Length: 351
Ligand SMILES: Cc1cc2nc3c(=O)[nH]c(=O)nc-3n(C[C@H](O)[C@H](O)[C@H](O)COP(=O)(O)O)c2cc1C
Image (cartoon, rainbow, N blue to C red; front, side, top):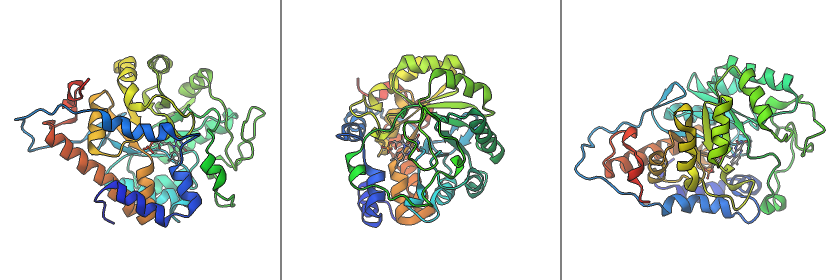
């Protein structure tokens, strides 16, 4: 699979995916304003390139919570990969490993954490958790993740209830027995659940009290995903969180939020040196990645693009997409006189 540019790949993915899979992948909530704004917000930021710098050797390597990877672009947690390819998350894990990038597996994955870890062959992986009401059950899942070799736990907090997608309503994923979150099977349905009809997953409005419990209980460092404000980030750090993911879930829940490009600097400043800060939402170019790093992110995540690659070409498609991002980042670093990621400082982006 070639990836000349992501727009062409997106169109190809749209052609090969069943209509409901395409809608599930592509849709934002309500009027899809945030989903679109995320992309344009990065594009609108202007770079201030430095000239006459030595750019012969470009280093995109970075350490993420103690793990060295060759690229600051992670595969974001996205659910239900078997809707995109028969091998589902196993193919994604293989593709990410082949590209040398970190894969964050979703709670809504359709393969077991053990199988996904094995498919990754020891490559770095984190597990994304939707907090569940039964702590014993959640605790057991955390232990399984640690035993399988996952290196961090990412708690998603921006979906206390699911957003509303008119497109998803009109073209729903048809319930099938094989479309379920296998790692959540057996979870009791709580009375506080908002969406008990969903197979195997219960929405549970997570609070700071739950986060405190999680940080104490979890054998892995905890990252919080879905933060859009500096004050929330500072509070998470106070509780002992090691990483903050600035995200609005790709515009899939609350519509008309601030874009992540607008708030990354505020959140990075609030988190200070006590936590690593990452960002996702609308990152489609190497220049987007460089801007995010310049504004304070240690790494970025991409959600929809690896799913386009997965649907078109399985593990090889994921690998190609993630390598494409790294190649574009290298070019952006060369053209801006930025030989290493530490040189991506805020003055690279016009105010
Ligand atoms: C199809 C799909 C499924 C997703 N599922 C999850 C999920 O299970 N957990 C989660 O934390 N985020 C989920 N997300 C959000 C992504 O992790 C990420 O925040 C978002 O896709 C980034 O925006 P981008 O797609 O513009 O790169 C999902 C996104 C998509 C597109």
